[in-house]
Length: 305
Picture 1 (cartoon, rainbow, N blue to C red):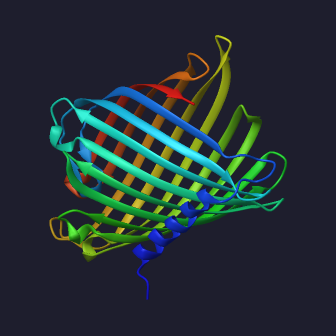
Picture 2 (cartoon, rainbow, N blue to C red):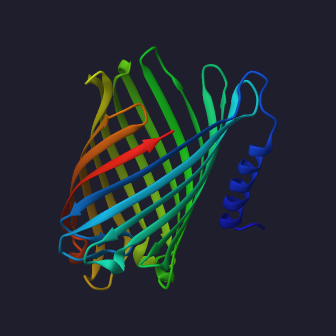
């Protein structure tokens, strides 16, 4: 019987194979890309996947690149393929310099009153040039308008994670997601509220957990210097409850993770834009090394086509 990992890779390959499909007679293939450079300051450099925090601040240079294509597969169906690359290089903490590659594919069909889709993603991340993380994600979804200004989306997500030299943290996850959007002024001003339930099964029982997550977002586009800028204010919260005692504290671990983020994007020309952002995270846990706060501020210059 195929393993979940093979199923994810098979789904990604099947979706990607659609790129060779014949173009729809009325719609043509569309390419897109973006390259960005920037810098950020982090008050507490950390590696969340392995509960490592330095307690110290550092700054990093950022480079990223994205290439994507949308391929029509008929009048109501589109295939999207994406490749993303990002690199964060720290001034002092070079051992957590991070390079990430993401391959993604999703296929969506407009059924009139509803939209269906399936997405598959493969992520490979390296720390200080060495293998660190592999992540596979497969997600079917259903979405559509409930009323003129109300839009809803629901999805199931299966994921599988492998961490180099830390097999006890390898895990499979089953999640359910629901999002509700209210378009106050179309895409110029809208709200998003979301909920996620997550059940993670790790190799070592002490890392198994279930969680409930909430998010609130407000997005506003406005005219600035004859161009349309965008601001986003977001709050995310996750309550994790681990299912087995953690030996170092002698009890079941409990985490409450809250994060606020403010993001401003201002176009400089038709293709050039500058983005500034600031975030604050308050991570409360009865495991001392997972109990910390973190502030990140940064800026990024991007060129898209």
